[in-house]
Amino acid sequence: MKGAYYTKQYRNVFAECGYTQEEIDRKLKDAFHLVFYGPENEKFYFEAGDDMGYFEDTGNHDVRTEGMSYAMMMCVQMNMKAEFDRVWKWARTYMYMEEGYHKGYFAWSCQTDGNKNDYGPAPDGEEFFAMALFFASHRWGDGEGIFNYSQEARNILSACIHNGENGSGAPIMEPENYLIRFIPDRKFSDPSYHCPHFYELFAEWANEEDREFWKKAAKASREYLKKACHPETGLAAEYAYYDGTPYPEEQNVFGGRHDWYYSDSYRVVANIGLDYEWFAPDGWHKENNNKVQKFFMETHKGEDFMTYEIDGTALDQPALHPVAIVATNAQASLAADGPYAEECVKRFWNTPLRTGDRRYYDNCLYLFALLALSGNYRIW
Image 1 (cartoon, helix red, strand yellow):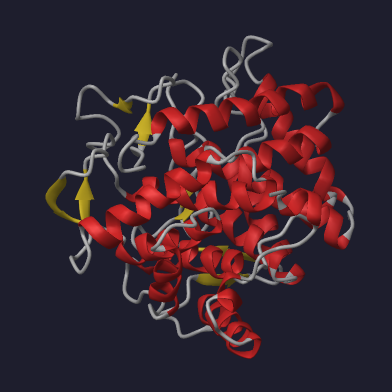
Image 2 (cartoon, rainbow, N blue to C red):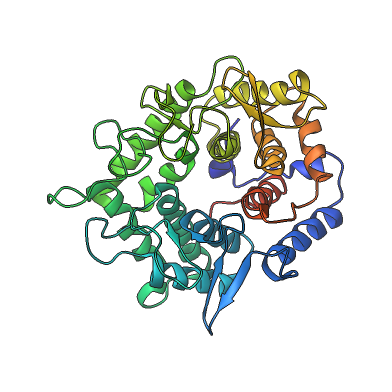
């Protein structure tokens, strides 16, 4: 099989499962309308002034580069240019760091009024910003200043590689092994940050001197994920060392444990699914996502989602984002071809968007799954 990068054909998995195009289009439209323009207690996109807007993490009452870059990716996929430009201007105005140790990166958390909560970056934001900007450039064309999308994307990617070369700052991408770091100053990773399908495209569109690096990063990321995902369950830890071993050895860092299958981790199978949809690099993607679906649909069928060790041991702690698990298990079906691939998709179809304070993260992954499974998460 060749991926959509080569064929220009994107699977509509919902249609394969028997849903009509009218049903699919309506579900996609309704979900996006709710998140962007629904009631105050259900949406999490908010306009700011005449020309800016932001996604609020409603569980933590802040604005994160994760959500802002996600919003931009969603908007470019849905052809929502006005909202894209609003979100990008907010991020570039309040989150971007023009000087200092982290010059060229974005502060990972701000208050909703734009004041920075922290001056460090979370690298998944940088890679999603860059990818969304390239897509915007190709779909809508470059504008002036910060709306010269492709130049802004190249600048971000250059910082990710070259920060630290002049003695100040640190790179997001590890120069020794081409893996993305959890944060610039720590030499370990987050498996859910690994988007080799993005790196393949960066290798075509980044500054020419950086393209070979991104090509190597795509290969290194795919090999890393094979180490980070458990050989029996397919589950990955939130954070992991460069050899794939769950991080940390000690439990009391970065707010607690991160060596288990918990919030960040859910994104891994979704990313693996999208990598397979776009590039179909090898059969491992199918094997791994089949294992994850089997774990949830067979070993723990009918149970409430919990927190798990990556070997599958269930811990006495409920999952913080259960709808996100349903969504990412469904997006895993872009690669999975086992007995539970269709069942996971149908379970997701019948699961509503999450309500309440914790809706932001779950519903971000929900919208991405809707895009991916309807054939609308595309390379532009």
